[in-house]
Image (tube, rainbow, N blue to C red; front, side, top):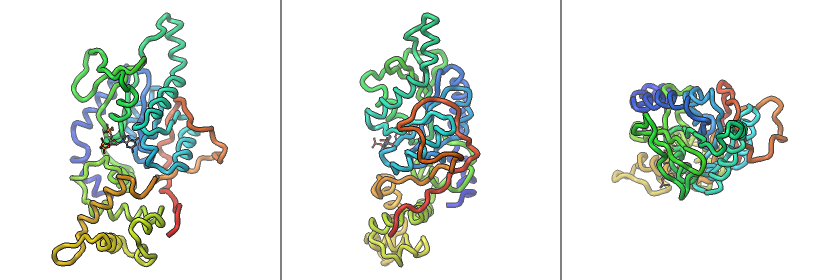
Length: 326
Ligand code: G4P
């Protein structure tokens, strides 16, 4: 997939409703006590929407690396450390598990302890804490809110200005503001665009699935060649084929043939993307954090939590280096 190609499609993948949502979020952010920025633990950098960072800039915020159950555990530890080393609060969770919500609740409690103490001094102990939940599409916001609110989930009392597309949900002493997932207008790189497409945050129907699958194979072969070879029973020679031929070899091995006997590349591509998303290739993280100065293996104990300033967005991550062998 070509990055310019993706950016040229900006009208489709950055539809008007996302631009509007960003404007609404800007206004709503003024009235919240904190912002939770949900990221995908498999692509923490690519899933960090710079527009959401700007919106959250003036607020205490917590980065939540969701879908940690799908990500490489060692790299998740490094990413949490990296965010923490930037002075940011960060916690890795799986929103599908109750323990994930509990970890975030602890982190939010801790981060907002100052606010609670001030409220108590003003005689407002027990005042509700308003938290905006933001992230890209498909990052797991609804799942997170459902788990976080659990049985206590209820639509919070009507508030002035509440319109369709965003709603308040009462969860214990928190009111969570659920916002629709948003992307941003121009991706900074081909990697970012591709990564977002791999995890399903850009609608497939505006993408060329064969190009997407080829890009995925390229990246997987660079980072986890052993897993790719094992899953599709590839020889070393096949693994080294040009990527389109590799896609064909996989399709042929799976018996995905057209009537004429050629490989049905479209079917093979759809299968590859589906298997990646369904975690059939094992736990995978496609990005490693940038090497931070003075950051060794002695970072904070995990899961780390707290809320602080955001990471330096100008610092690009590396594509994950090769971590297994054929
Ligand atoms: P969104 O509101 O941000 O758009 O995301 P949503 O909660 O709808 O989640 C998108 C998909 O990601 C869902 O899968 C959901 O189950 C899955 N998901 C969310 N959090 C996690 C997590 O921590 N780990 C894993 N493994 N998956 C997670 P789906 O296939 O679209 O729906 P469903 O069939 O699971 O209901």
